[in-house]
Image (cartoon, rainbow, N blue to C red; front, side, top):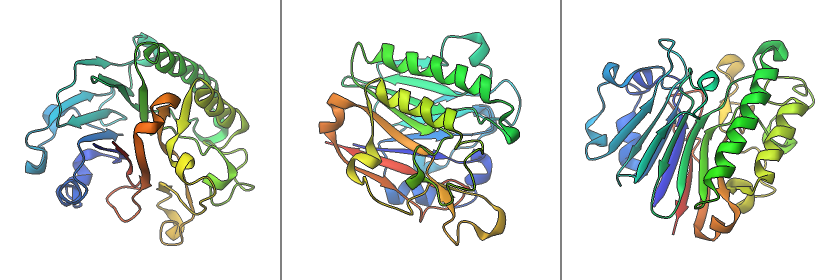
Amino acid sequence: MKLISWNVNGIRATLGKGFGDFVTSEKPDILCLQETKARPEQVTLPSELDGFHGYWDSAKKPGYSGTAIFTREQPLDVRVGLGVDEHDMEGRVLTLEYPDFHLVNVYTPNSQDGLRRLPYRLTWDAVFRRHCAELAKTKPVIFCGDLNVAHQEIDIARPKENRFSAGFSDEERASFTELLGAGFTDSFRHFYPDKKDAYSWWSFRGGARQRNVGWRIDYFGVSEPFMSRVKDAEILPHITGSDHCPVAITLA
């Protein structure tokens, strides 16, 4: 089973940039999208997603945020949001239950310039961490998506220059450490602990992607006991159409 996660930075825009070819070439069994920026009735899905079951969590604000999951296997259960009104206005979390695991698709809030939204971000992180930990009491959890944090210095091209930037503040990195400490493994680093220059997001400015001046902020986190089922974790920088590239895991 192949699971892919991708922040598409607007699904309607990405559909015109080879999205169907991507689905054909990568053959996901489950495809998790973030920053869809649309409601389902606004989107004409490509034929490549025929036969998939689709689930959406769209933001109340038009053209903003949003998540979606397309899955070949119909899940046992679907939960939209975190169950907390304060945190469920922006379409950031979808949880699907399968026979062997829970899958959580997440688009974590950005702390924004000057870290002006950092206090909210850290509160949100704590609620999301509890959500995943509660799910893990019943069966293993896979969370994936744009977590909006580069965890370690190896995960960012210019760590010194970005020490106090949104997505690389000490507080956000410590919060992600807490999430992993709740019983989860960063799947990519499990397989590639020392791999450098492996990024999933690049600024549109200054030719950052061409020069690979990027950040790794998209993840698959997996319950530690379930890692034996994960055969590989990948970053797919050859897939364009967004400022992010997809990330993937393969399950036995």
